[in-house]
Amino acid sequence: MLACMTDSSNPLMYWFPAKRYGWGWGPPNSWHGWAVLAGFVLSIVIGALIFPPQRWLGQYLAWTTVCTAQLIAICWHKGEPPRWRWGENKP
Image 1 (cartoon, rainbow, N blue to C red):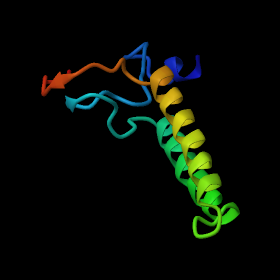
Image 2 (spheres, rainbow, N blue to C red):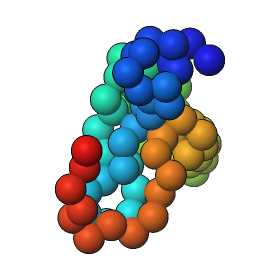
Image 3 (cartoon, rainbow, N blue to C red):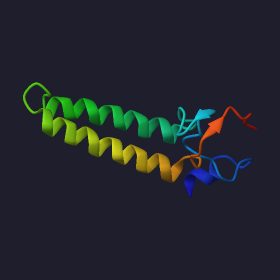
Image 4 (cartoon, one colour):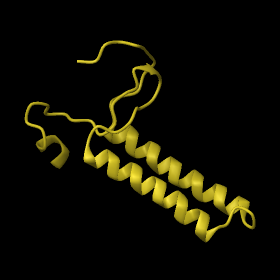
């Protein structure tokens, strides 16, 4: 709800815009998205400290998989709807 209220000219502001080419999302376009991305990177670094890949590769890969799944879920929920794009001009 807060994200919708931050920009009065755009009532539905996406945290992650769709990529111009291909499928998926591009870099964040709001501070909310950058905070989520920073949290993801921080969680991967923390996972490497908790589960050093040299000793616990399986646990580290499981940690990374869970963190990545959470990032994708947030992008899916707060990002522009994904579809294959061929370089359309964005407004």
